[in-house]
Length: 130
Image (cartoon, rainbow, N blue to C red; front, side, top):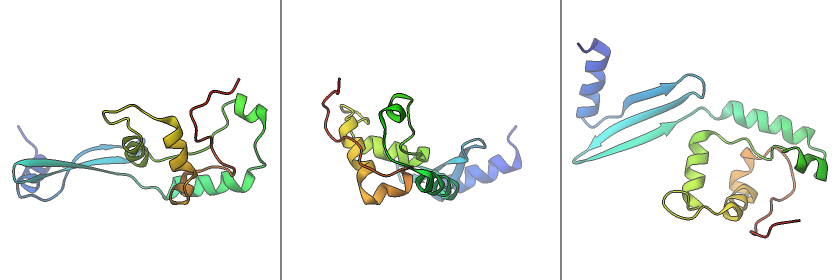
C-alpha cells in the first residue's frame, strides 16, 4: 500500500511538476523527476556552498606545486557530484572517449575556479611524463 506522501509525489509527477525521486543524506544529492508530455526528465541538485568554502580554505593554504605533492596524490579540486557529472559529459564520458586533458582544461577555466583547491594550471595535453 502506498503512503500518503508517495501518493502526493505521484500526483505531482503526473501533473508535470518536479517530484522528488530520491535523496542521499550523505552527499545531499536529490534526484527529481518530471513528466513532459511523452518524455521523462530528471534533474540532480546538491548544495554547493560547503564545498566552495572548503575549497577557499584550501586555496588560502596552497603553497605551490612540488613533485612530492604530485606523487602523494595532492587534491587539485573538490567538485560536487552533480557538477562533476556535467563536466564528464562535456569531456566525452557520456558515450564517447573520455579525455583527461579536456577535463583539466575545464578545471583551468575561470568558470570552474570555485572547484579548484590550489593555484597553478593543470596539464592540458595527453602526453605522459616519465
